[in-house]
Length: 372
Image 1 (cartoon, helix red, strand yellow):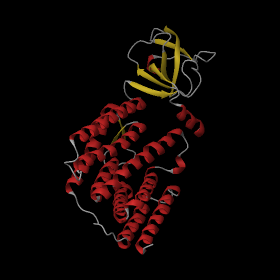
Image 2 (cartoon, one colour):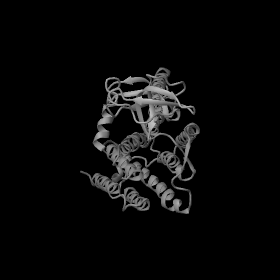
Image 3 (cartoon, rainbow, N blue to C red):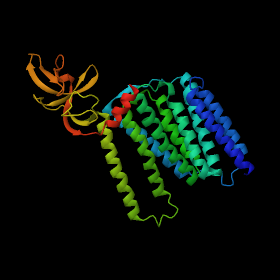
Image 4 (tube, rainbow, N blue to C red):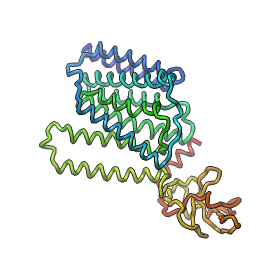
């Protein structure tokens, strides 16, 4: 084995070890310490890994394209925020934020992408998967605390919001380095789509699963855009192939957006997984129901979704009475021997059940039971 290969594998091994330390000892590693360690790795990599390929090139067109995509992405989620609402940023812009968050994040991004470039341009076949693993672990360390994974929501945030979206994005970044050797485009894109939360005082209140799937879709869309615009043999990239890619992407996007709208429960229709057996026989545990938000009168016999102490419940209306100040609805689970305690008002009712999808929520129920 050549000396430079040995150095490469040693650096990669230490990168994996330190990135795992960032995750499991996150309370001891601040963002500043992470930035310093990664900058040291960047310097070592640039000094000891000598690539026979070009060290990278500055493709202004690609950089501008990635900048434009980043701006369009931010504009889109803030336009969506007009509909779903906003919440105040948890970390306000200040000198303390600049020192402890903004500067460290920028340095971490710059160091990570320079390390990615140096290693992949030396050996992109074997190092591709190693860099992918390291970068995903770093994303976990930067956005989550491994010790906070105690509830089902925490689990989905870690798996959906961090790991899957990180894999999708880092596959794209590896592709850009290997194919175009341009790390500046990635650095600018990552800084804009990551650090904006510390500059803007309000953040769109987008459902976590909605944003997770969106973050997985966007890298694929960017990949298609790059394929169409930077094909080495553009003449061979036929109109038919372009049309097919656009059609597949459009269908995939429509299906994904439809799923996002259902899961987010922020639009006319929503979906819920049934986690109890109170409606067994009509709607079973592990089924998924599709409901329509309330826009008509509720009648006796309707199966409704209502809030009971911040918990969504799916039961049947068995009676209703006019109290003089409003209609009171009395509910019961079809499999329960007794009706529910108290009554529901119109303000408690979210919608009516329109469709049952058997068994689709079994995995979710299983995971929920494991964590609870």
